[in-house]
Amino acid sequence: MWLKLLFGVLMYFEVEQLGKIAIKSQFQNDLLISYTNAFSSGLFLAVGIVHILPEANEILLEYIDYPIAFLIAIMGFSLLLFVEKILFRNVEDNPCCSNCQELQELDHHQKHHQAILLENFDHQHTDKLIHSLKHNQNNLKPYLLSAAIGLHAIFEGIAVGVTARTSDTLALGLSLMGHKWAEGWALGVAFRESNVEKAIQVKFIIFAALLSPIGILIGIIIARESTLISGIVQSITAGTFIYIASTELIVEEFNKNNNKLIKYILYLLGIMLMSFIVYLE
Figure 1 (cartoon, rainbow, N blue to C red):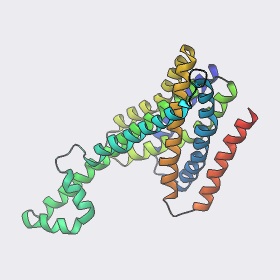
Figure 2 (figure 1 turned 135 degrees about the vertical axis):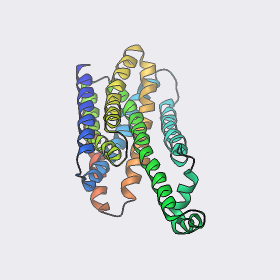
Figure 3 (figure 1 turned 120 degrees about the vertical axis):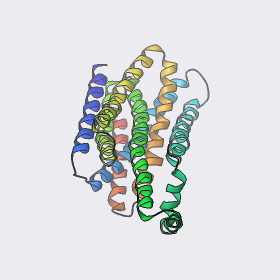
Figure 4 (figure 1 turned 90 degrees about the vertical axis):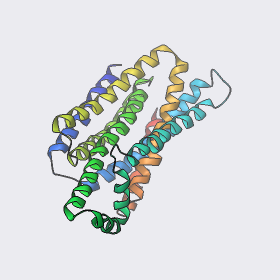
């Protein structure tokens, strides 16, 4: 249990410190973050499929003669898909501003709609409108990102909390720590580029950083209650790891046209590393 709590503390400081540094710093190394994401995508995919899911299936087969763990994993995958791509996307596409429709139109046909607006308003009014719309969109982005990162952090923390063996805790904790710094940095950059007050930025960074330790504590409690509940939760977290790897990290990095071969090699190395750790166990 102490190893789990140690990882919780380390993850908190990793996200909190990197987030705060990113808010203050003008340094931005997109290539390093891309390489980290590519490696983490392979690592997370193998964690979900090779590491967590077989263990959860083994537990649940004692209760039902059906590969229910795989079905629950799909449900966990589908839960994140709904929350991020439907629920959050609706909020992102319809931000709380009365002029969001103008924003979408200006993004696609800016010159055309500027001409229409100029028929009714002067140049100064049009410029203020465009600035206001973009200002609202930039301010919304870090909140959506912190919600998405927070959701991931809770499930990742639970996955660490429910591990039964020290070797499992060590492997999972180290793999998550290799990715947490990128999450903290991305969140800090998103707040830096917004017009949100500094005090609020820091509070959201701290809140996002706390969610991994909270997830670990929830996982520890679940593991003590029942092996059945532990198996169910492990299945859900397996689905979330597969989701994060396949629909976010892999899609995001391999849609970019630069250094794809290097990123693919890093992706394979992530899979090989986790598979080797599972083999040693």
